[in-house]
Image (cartoon, rainbow, N blue to C red; front, side, top):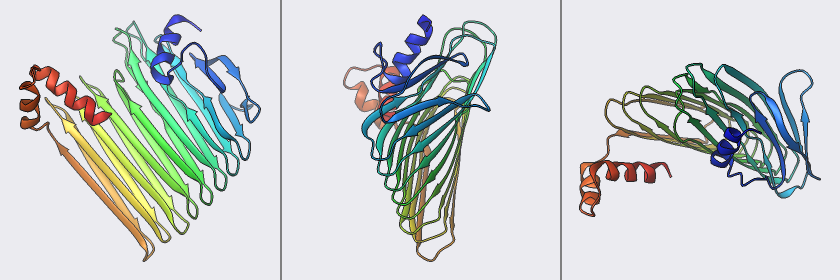
Length: 305
């Protein structure tokens, strides 16, 4: 691994010189390191770039890390990763992508992740995206997530875009069986002329399935964000979508949540709120000795944390 990759790994995956558990490190479209564990097997795909990750039934308290780094311009990295999670497993998956450029050439990472969760399994998925460097080339990260949850499976996703990404399209599609639960917490910060698009689609096909989508976003300067969610209840189930956004300067945010109840006992709800930082919040922090810029930064950090 080069030094830029190491710096990016520290930010997107809390790497401290080594990973604890199974891992695969992707650097500029190639494998920079891999290790399987007793219960987690990582293999290269045979027909396209990417991985097949097999998590044995009953696996507990283990972590698999699959970060991807792009360290210079003129790279368009496409990867397909499939996760096969055995029954009653309970694991943590740490992903994330960092892009660093110092030239005017664009760089892009497109990660397509598919999750197949067996009965009673649970996955905690953590993902951070970041753009770094002083180059003028467009930094693009386009994650795609597809998930199929069998009976009583649980997928918890915590995703964050923490700055420096010029363009992103974030697509998530999920299908839930009986008693399955999907919980997504998304946090996005855009600045300058950056754009971010989020598109969720969740189908609940089994009795007592449930989904909770929560998006927190901040659009600053001339940046633009759009949020679109579709929740379909095909059985007795519960669904909740929440989009809260802060805009400042000339930032723009569009929010379009959709609910489709196809069963009399489908209980679905959505909330959307877009606005600027309240003046009294800034005033209160300024009385504590902060400048207006420091007060605004503190409010935004708290909102996205």
